Amino acid sequence: RGTGGTREVSWDDDVSSLVLRHPGRVDLGRIGDFVEGLLEAYGNDMLRYKGILAIADRDERLIFQGVHRITGFDYGRPWAEGECPECLIVIIGRRLDDADIRSRFARAVGQDATSTGVPGAGPSGACPG
Image (cartoon, rainbow, N blue to C red; front, side):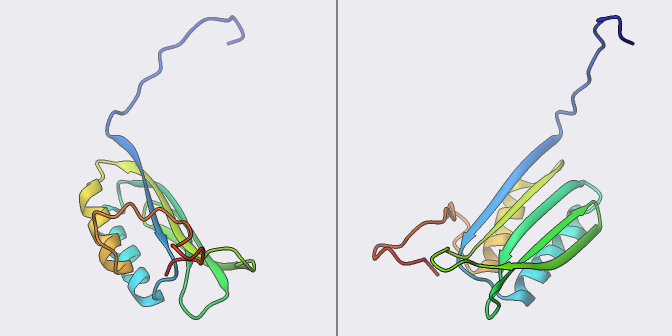
């Protein structure tokens, strides 16, 4: 306490983070089912998660965040003109099955599970999706 001494810090090697990204808009029902499935499968091990989602037929971005099985959703500001709507989710947790979560997400957004999902302009310079 104020003596300049050191103290031992313990690390939990089971904690990891995962970023999921999909260019374009997604169906609200499908992405809702994805989040619900994650909470059922990993809720106790998901320490923190947050995301910004581009929902089909909505101008506003859907923002969500949570801790363990407690989650909240709210619509935020609209996507700006010229801005490419995308879905971005960050999960921090213990003992997360990266491959399973990526596969679930790919099914929810209709994307190949091997795709990186990195957003960017398509060949014509327009937004993908």
